[in-house]
Image (tube, rainbow, N blue to C red; front, top):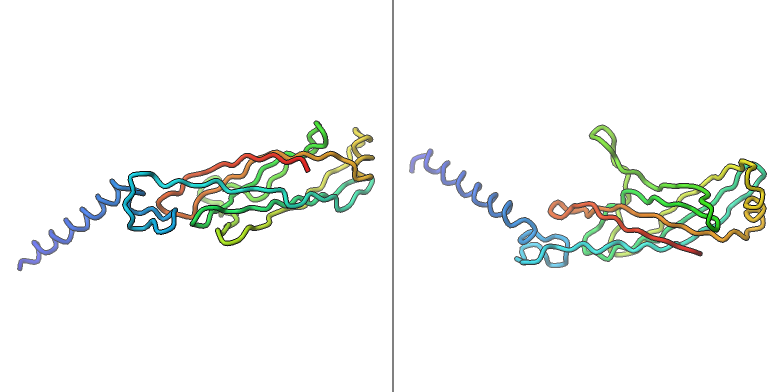
Length: 181
């Protein structure tokens, strides 16, 4: 057989395979749900939102100048595949007054910066947290007194940004949350 005809057949078969994958998208390669690869489905793959719980909010230390607060979140992934948690952004309130804005992780912007994300597996929840330092400006002695006496009524609200660690279904997802411990 002529080598030009053989190369033409190989290129045609590869082109057809690429066309089928490109046009079918996640219908054939649904790697989001269990048993999804090779399973042809008319429904698009759905991503379940991660579940966020407040694991701990603890005042570690209070001095006249600053206070250290530990905030931990329990993250559970209900999806079959692991997810990449990029960032948790939240506001910390004492009653109705916003005390601070905090962020765990980051979202890379541009091609130069590397990613700093947490991989959340579906097998077990993961605790992710950070220590927050609050400086005493002297403008709110009532709040600082309540902080020293550990009588602050805390409230946290924010959002978590995550993506699937999947090549075929990797769009961005946002989960809002609010806690009043």
